[in-house]
Image (cartoon, rainbow, N blue to C red):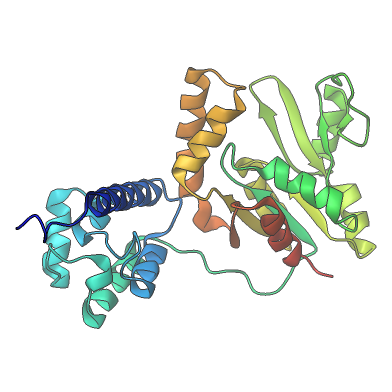
Length: 299
């Protein structure tokens, strides 16, 4: 190539930066697939919609090995069975190949189907550091018609906490009575010490008055509510990406490295259970996420 035909230095630098950004985007997407932040079916849909997107430019080999429990040997057998070339990218699959891959994914990876209609009782749960409390607080401040449930706890009040606003503070005997009488929608022992639970009475009264109710609780509590209150709609709050979830957890600065590792390990297990929920909402923007939660409630 002559000097005159050689591309300007600024163009080469820009192209290099663009290539690096594309590789990082694909690497981030593969982590999201592995951690189940995004379903493989959704990645395939993104690839079909835009072949130049991170999903569209992801090689089918990389896509498959990002899936849980898929190694190279199993990947190669899958490609052979589906008659897909290993050099293919997701955005370059033909209609037959895309359909075959979609059918294979549907048989092995459950994708939740949104529950039709609205509900007066919505349960908001999700992995650590996803921002459940922030979304719930935004709803409290901007949607006064929505009642946010108040938990009962056996621990003592902390400075600034008010009875009936932050928690209902009860002793162990009263908590035992509430369990025995079926007065709690859900309850659990946290950190092996104090117990927390959601009283049923205030929720029933609010719903009878026509008010929507929001429960912001952990995963264990959400599944208990599903068992005891079938009318509840379960909403799973997702992070925009796995990398963002890690950054949020680190940025809080409230846990040491050992505790962060434990919480991230728990988050992986929680993300794997998202298929049990009726709706998924990505917490990329708090205002938008809060609006989506409120929209699921009956007027």
